[in-house]
Amino acid sequence: MEMGSLATGTNHYYSPCAACKFLRRKCIAGCIFAPYFPPEEPQKFANVHKVFGASNVAKLLNEVLPHQRQDAVVSLAYQAEARIRDPVYGCVAAISFLQKQVQRLQNELDAAKARLLLYSCTDFSTPFSPQPQIISPPLLWNHNDIVSANSSVYFNGGI
Image (cartoon, rainbow, N blue to C red; front, side, top):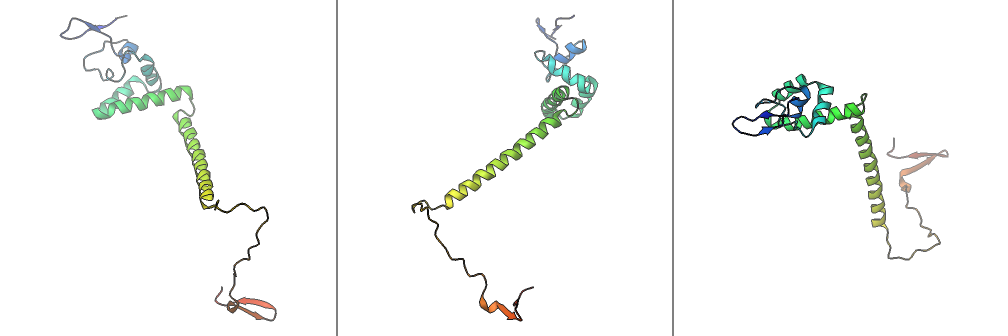
């Protein structure tokens, strides 16, 4: 197996990218994989190749704008790793888990806000009295709105 290629115009060897190493081919100067699959991360390309295929990844990288390629590779690597870990759901399982966690945390936050509101509305300046105070309820109906006829009750201006 080739240990490295002679870099053009220099007297030192460099290691081929992880993709070329995995595919057992010579890593050329304009290799589409080299900037995104360094030789120190062989498993990253192995996972991406296993799930998507080297040809499809090369096509995708050539179609994506150069400034977006790094993000595309990060996404492909994440999706490939998730698919290998969970062949059925892949990254959807992680997304679902995170959505449930967000919902649970939102519920906890809402409960904490409700408790805060309760405490902020409580008057702590008056001492607590163990005996309940009887407070008369407010007058709900104005006596002018109620008309009684033959022991039935009718509401003026009602339904």
